[in-house]
Image 1 (spheres, one colour):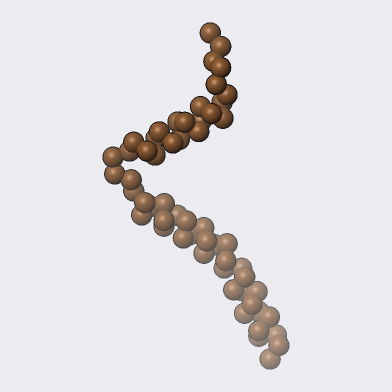
Image 2 (cartoon, one colour):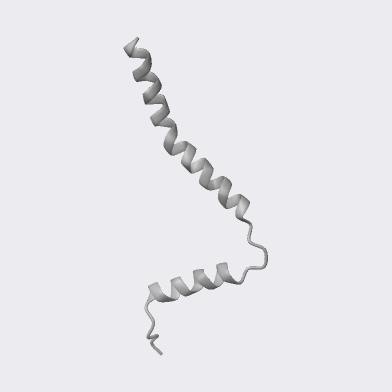
Length: 57
């Protein structure tokens, strides 16, 4: 029997149901992971700004 729903719709429903019905969401681990990603992404900008500031002196 062939399904009539696309894979994208089924994946979207699976993810929304998974996050909607979990008992106690653990946002702390997701927040820490997001903060680490942001720091890793922003760190080269600070290094470049520091290098440019020291070469101007």
